[in-house]
Image (cartoon, rainbow, N blue to C red; front, side, top):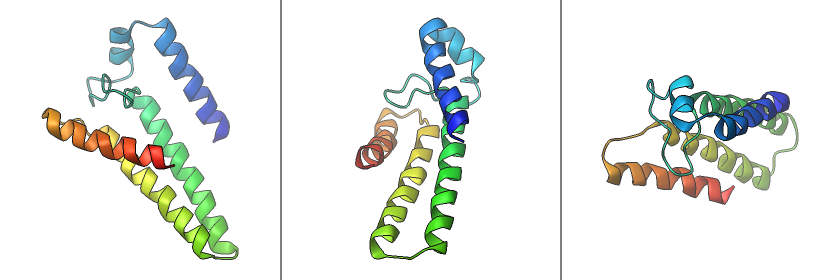
Length: 116
């Protein structure tokens, strides 16, 4: 999963640098689910889906490791925080037309990312 995340991240950065933004939005499916153009949440749809897949595999590995090993309150608090971070990132897929709602959900994604 590390290599998948690395290649997807490099492809996204190269896309931002080498392809015009409008073309990149059309090529990556922004017309299906409009998520580009939002500050700090402007990853193309394919990149966001990749982030979710890699994060879920990472959390699955950590959770299974923790359940098999010694369970402490610190590890439980850390796992709850990581699962919360993953859940709050899902708000980045929702792009309401109302600007107030958009900033509300944007805040939850940004707040959860700043705590990690």
